[in-house]
Length: 332
Ligand code: TYM
Image 1 (spheres, rainbow, N blue to C red):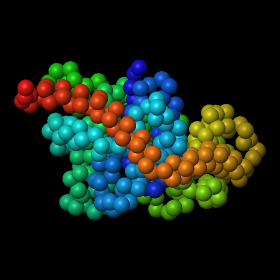
Image 2 (cartoon, rainbow, N blue to C red):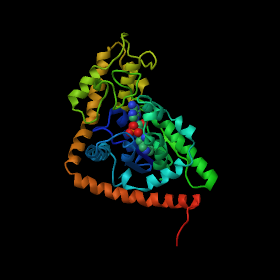
Image 3 (cartoon, helix red, strand yellow):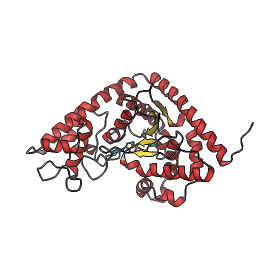
Image 4 (tube, rainbow, N blue to C red):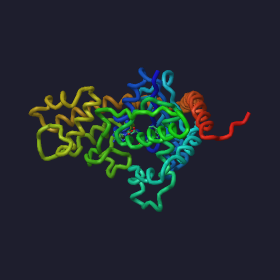
């Protein structure tokens, strides 16, 4: 079966609606068709300061949310990045193949280092895309299901795979980014031209999967729209309304084109009520199952240990070939 691989950083207590609709929903869909690998990139999380106890807890919580959201651990491989040391080993080789200028052009690095200045940014933040390329190329996937903001990182992984293959002989499959047509960009509810992110300026712009239903409904109902009254899809002039339509499209399984006529002659309030209801109905079971899973951390860790050993089998094979091809001395 063709393969997919993806991950989400354990850098918050809860996934947000962007993570859920932009990524997790598609991961779950991919499982029947693909041999799927989903992992928790804890090594990526330490590119910015982390509290150790919190990181441990969030790593489990993230894994629990994958399962609660529908990742089937019997069918797919679920693991934690730091449990598979080959990621760090391959990352070094790929780092040595990346140009300084090439890495400097990564928009995420530019954004994240802009605040404190490049001088003060961690080098881990700079080499992050090479670690991500290692995560991906290690498993020789056909596709990487991600939201739109990861497009450039997947593109770098493709570039590095081609470069390695060219220089050292055919070693890596060159993967495609699998970006959904709807849900790939969920925006902040208060600032609907900015993508939804855990570092939102106001918590009211953010929907966390683990928030209680009342909070979720309240935030959706107070989403920023515009002074017009017509429900229409227009990213440029009606970003708030368009965002709500996008969200509703993914959770209802309808297209935006199907939804818009349903709101003819209706006010924004109607749309908000429907979005709130649909989102609450979608994430409530995820929240409940996450809580149940977190009640038994030993069982969760057992599942992660199984996943780690399945992942290591594949990782060891790729790394072995890489080491051989770059010219590292093989003993015995
Ligand atoms: P991360 O943890 O920022 O996000 C996890 C996933 O959620 C998607 N996403 C969104 N989708 C739609 N709208 C939004 N507002 C939104 N915000 C986030 C992201 O596109 C992503 O799919 N570098 C990665 C983690 C990573 C990874 C990998 C992913 C590390 N190694 C290998 C794939 C393959 C990241 O920081 O995603």
